[in-house]
Length: 63
Length: 136
Image (cartoon, rainbow over all chains, first blue to last red; front, side, top):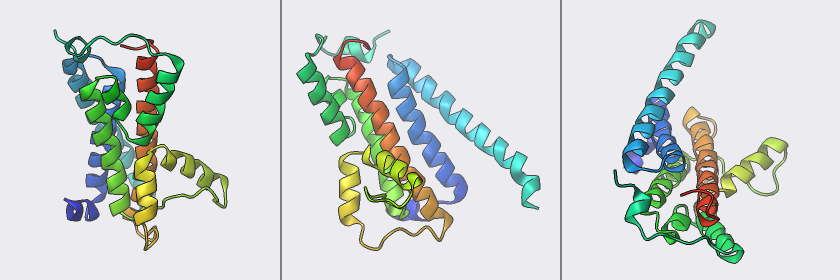
């Protein structure tokens, strides 16, 4: 597992970060277990969508 | 629907000393404050989130800021890193090779370590709210 962490790609690092921070947000923000899972999933998907969206917006600047 | 709180023993509002103990416990070890308040799932969630970010940050050889930083960014980084409690001190002890910020992964590691502390501070605030009876 440590080796996998050491060789994370940029996208992998973003997914890992999004997953753990979403779990923390859900733990702090929601009370019941079911709403917590839904909220964590929603945060995770938003993290990924916004991250990929910003990457696409910045793509022309890299050329 | 059963909530985590309805499954656990109802807690009365903590006195100020009890709340302070909860805050210190939650800071020292992420999730411990919630465990003392019998919020098992939340305690586990904060432990995994903060611990996972700290572990990744350490493995990626992110920069662990010290108290004596050269600039304000370093001071903010120190506050953020310190938020992860025990993980910060363990990382400081185990860090021998220094940060590797010459690669992007090292820079990610620095962010992961800071995020670990911020996530734990969020947990500390949540535990304090529960201990004071402001949150369920």
